[in-house]
Image (cartoon, rainbow over the protein chains, first blue to last red):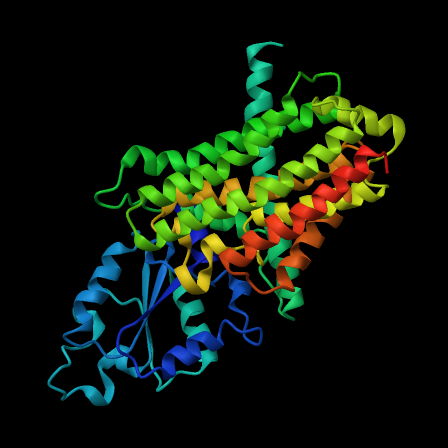
Length: 138
Length: 306
């Protein structure tokens, strides 16, 4: 049973894109990986519109006082075996916004992050590599 | 028939399990053809089964403040209706004498149950986007049902006024398929476009318009409930072309029928991939004015035996 669950989760990770105050560069790269050129549907990855359908949350942007409660709420709304993938340097370690008065720290202080994909923004190839590596390690 | 045989026919073949497996395979064909049109590679063949397995084993969340019974009734209603429908369609295709008066009308109403399930589920899930989706689903249902019923009336006229599904198939085996005439072609066109809307495929995917209202009525569903919706949709994708071929293209009882069936499925997918989405008022106008008038013309032609 556990094996079947793992196989299903590995073969069809549906992702929900949580844009928590990003500068939009990472979001454009995430949209790029859904285009025919990179075609992540080969791995069964589909972008869904509701966190209820999601198995993986792609979080982008630096977390701040306003976006923290929203991100926590989206994380709570997601049905539970779920991955959190931090895309971009901001999501990994707050990047150049670290001394800002409004920033409350990187994501892993609040929710468990499974994959860190650094880069400002990361290339689409890097995002696919990160997700595939994470799925292999499950 | 013994109880065991009846149970076998409803649960395994040609009922729930067989229809579900073939339906999920058809959704793979849909995704693969779509991918090839986009010049992509597309998902592997086991993709829909992996999706279904994953959804079955995930957590199912019932939103706070919604009616638990209605929320879970929504997905179940369509699934049960589709299982019964599969048994009716296939048993009467294999043996046209196993028919009863008015079974065509029962079939039409069983096809109406999945949209009703979607409306119940969407309105009970306490989400504004789901409510918008449910109301659009309702409008869409009233839109496509009118020309669909007119097209069925053409079929009834051509079968000599019979509302027995088995007799319609028998009449085609005796005197040739209904599609090879002007009114038959009109009926096929009208039913094909209604099938497109029944499956909520583009250009009629208004209830679940991804770019406007996310997933529409399905937005609050997760885990098992979402899996049931997906599988109901897959079964409809299997049974609607079977119904079309049964009533208009000579029945579903020889090997040629599988080729016809695949042709209809690929046609549906091609229409899906080459059209933009309509607004809900445009869709209503298209079905009531455009296809409504076309199907009435077909009805008049069928009355004069053309």
